Amino acid sequence: MIELKRLHKSYITGNNKLHVLKGLDLTIEQGELVSIMGSSGSGKSTLLNILGILDSYDQGSYKLNGTLMSNLTEKKAAHYRNNLLGFVFQSFNLISFKNAVENVALPLYYQGVSRKKRNKIALDYLDKMGLKDWAEHMPSELSGGQKQRVAIARAMISKPKVILADEPTGALDSATSIEVMELFREINKDGITMIIVTHEQDISEKTDRIIHLKDGIIEFEHNTKKLVYV
Ligand code: ADP
Ligand code: MG
Image (cartoon, rainbow, N blue to C red; front, side, top):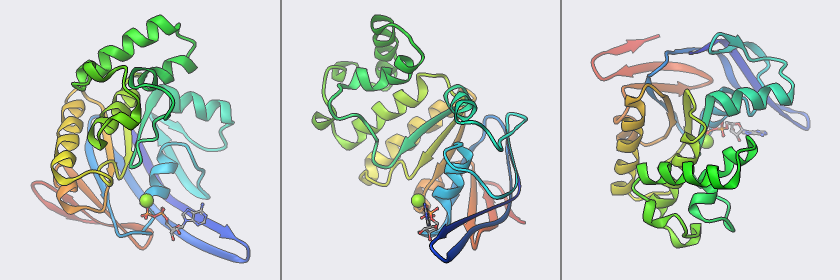
């Protein structure tokens, strides 16, 4: 599903070059539930943004679903993003002046689905998240956990093969964080690949495979059953 080989990424600001990813190798199969751990600044978001085709890389290769992701036009990149990927962020990224159902329906708006049809589908997804009664509420009227469930419904509505989540529980209390992780586990049971960036040990322990990022490479991996050194 996802195959990174010898991946390099640097940021250049002025005369400074910051080498963030230094020849990273990683393979993630369809249906895996994976977390990426590492200290602040270790390159977790950089890696996730590359996986999400939101940013480019300098060297090496990234294959998504068998296709090499490099030198893509913005149109092609958007095509892969819209058809294969769903995104969940720490800060929810909901549109403040749209209600819950309209937020969830947004990806379908971009696909040209009629308002009536997209809102009906969005309501089904909100229902799956236990939020049917909150459909008409604005984001400001929702708790953090509810906002994140709206965001997850929005990520799900275009039927992605992979969900990429960057610190999805970073703004939530621990009880709500556990609920969100349980929701991710449920979603994963349907075969959707889940890649969750976190710096919290207890969150990563809810996944099946923990990938530790350090100094621009994968330092080691942790499986529920065994410890794998790479
Ligand atoms: P993490 O998500 O693990 O905290 P990031 O991937 O956000 O780490 O950042 C890795 C390093 O790259 C940090 O030192 C950060 O300051 C730097 N960085 C991230 N994005 C940019 C950017 N757009 N331009 C320059 N430097 C960046
Ligand atoms: Mg980050």
